[in-house]
Amino acid sequence: MYYEPGRTDHGLPHDPFKSCVVPRPIGWISTVDSAGADNLAPFSQFQNVSFDPPMVLFAANQDSRGRRKDTVRNAEQTGEFVWNMATWDQREAVNASAQEVGPDVDEFELAGLLKLDSRIVRPKRVSGSPIQFECKVITTLRLPGGGLMGTVDVVFGRVVGVHIGESVLDEQGRVDVLKARPIARMGYYEYTVVDNKFDMVIPGDQRALLGGLEGSASKVRAAADPAGSSGAARQPERDRE
Image 1 (tube, rainbow, N blue to C red):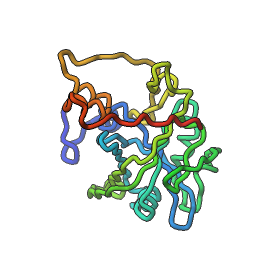
Image 2 (tube, rainbow, N blue to C red; image 1 turned 60 degrees about the horizontal axis):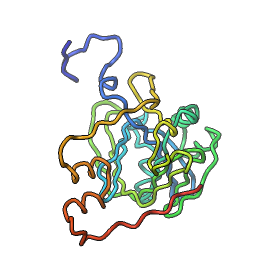
Image 3 (cartoon, rainbow, N blue to C red; image 1 turned 30 degrees about the horizontal axis):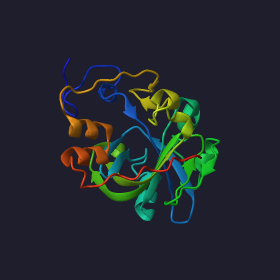
């Protein structure tokens, strides 16, 4: 089949677009407004942007009335947000926090979640989520769309603090995704969970490339400067919360 979005009808009973770009990491984003009210919402359009420095983005369409989401307004007002990894164990809480409610409703309470203080930013973290990123807003890119909900705000943030629970680290000090069991969005009302993995290493002497795939700024710099004049990166302290 073939169709041109916005011009020709796909002829299917359900729109296939979101089911073609899968799976999508969930941006479970916590924010706080200027008055101190907490907010939490999941976004299926979330991704890392770069690793040196680490940056992420989440994209938020308008709500059903064509208004900007509370998450976007809060992030722009305060310049901060937190990404919380959404996992299988907390799937029902993720779904509960997705409800469209007023800005006076605390989704942490709505979903029955406990809050954790962040170290650098004001927004709270989700207790029980194994990994969280504290982020400072870099910029927001607003893209016009069709219909009430089509316009989208793309919020970019620099990661200034990383929390990783010891329970999801393996013996080699790597994040074990099978222990974390993150969930991801598919199409329609479908989700999936990461419960298997496999390795593929690019062949050849590609040290800088492999360092980039790992997301290791220190390894990329070491490959570019074998003499080590750039210095070794300090090993970060593990988060024991």
